Image 1 (tube, rainbow, N blue to C red):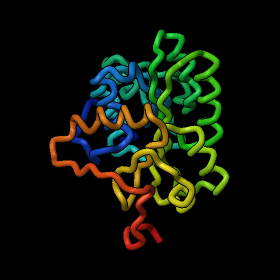
Image 2: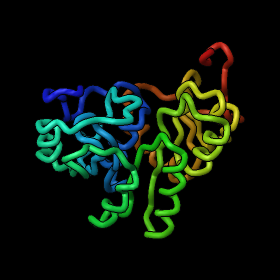
Image 3: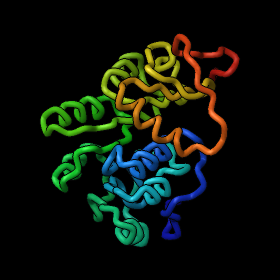
Image 4: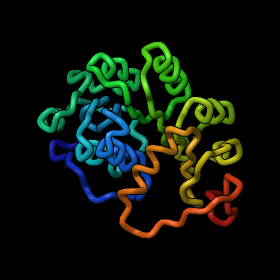
Length: 219
């Protein structure tokens, strides 16, 4: 990572229900048509290649800024990805408008900023898109930011955020130590597509949510 030797194609899945894994399964099933995500050495990337999406997102955590690396950008383009700004490697999820200009309607995006999530929902209505907004890297958000993310995302990965855990009223929850909260029906649908690809046994039950075992939470 952060080198010209950056591996870009699908690696072994690191977690069963991570953001990149969910998007990978969504692309394979056809429930989404493209993704807008960030990659070290390239910045914002549009892709409809599930293996590339997983390769970019696998083990990627907390990226807020990067610089262009020619070999990484060339590799992404070789595998069908579109790098939005090859000169600056800027990270900006509002590039989803570019994905819409390319003809994509069902688009999944990862965001960490509540203001961006809100703008994406406004853009979704304006352009008549069908966005799946996945909130990631939320550990340090304030209570107000957590509420805004929950109001403007379809899936929220709680990380170590106390506020997300306290405020979430999920439709579906995955895991208990680092819960993934599904907030909307379409978030639930893409999560089901991911579950179809999981080879290990899965427990499905009904209960009041969220389930937050105290002994499993971050201090």
